[in-house]
Length: 162
Image 1 (cartoon, rainbow, N blue to C red):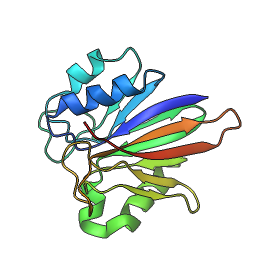
Image 2: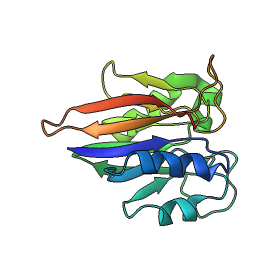
Image 3: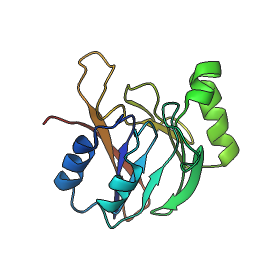
């Protein structure tokens, strides 16, 4: 079994990310969908496991990639912030990007609202925002991604309360 934490839109509130890392010491990877607010290096130093971070629309500088396609637990995973697709064609444009990447799971951020679509392939996931939520109850959120031994992916959409 492989376990990863999925974040987005922390906007410089590293303490929330670190608190979640402490709650999940068995994590083997961290995925961040952008708008990290300059905390990329500090997040990478906080865990011995791989940390994948893409550039969001509020991240400046060339050190973060616009998108990443990688493998985790036998699944091909695509990451991008999403604003380049969502702002112009909505979720269908993002889904088209994911299909072009031929991924099993496509993750994005930008909206600050959690979203999970398991219908068909690929699975689409937005963990919401760990620091500036916009959904109805305005509770910060993140996702725990678990790839089971049988290859099935499980998504636990989690609320973060200090």
